[in-house]
Image (cartoon, rainbow, N blue to C red):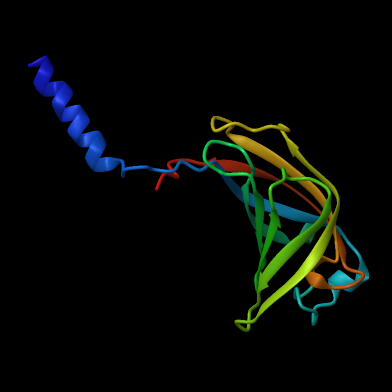
Length: 166
């Protein structure tokens, strides 16, 4: 009987888990625009304008830090607005300050690239693990959306997305 149970458990795990499965650690939630320069608040601009204060713009955020489980050496931050998606890539680096290449996908199906300057960038805890449930992300980003003079400060709490094996 024990042998049958063990064999059944192994068979189920083989069926459910693909060979060579990769496990990712990803956090998702919203970051809010706390401050924005006037170049960012133009409602006709590329980002559609960003609000601060009580009616702060909320950006859907997906964060994948480097070196956690099978995430690989790159950190990635995807920010989604009501009109566009912005992908930032820290190639071979942890999330932090620097000139970070970005790729944008616009509301008119256009693709654009630029470098954003992250003048401050922190996560708490500073070294999340696969069991970390919440990550707080804060950043000050210049040339946001590739717009000269557009600098935003964002802050938010992101929750761990479970079951990201493929």
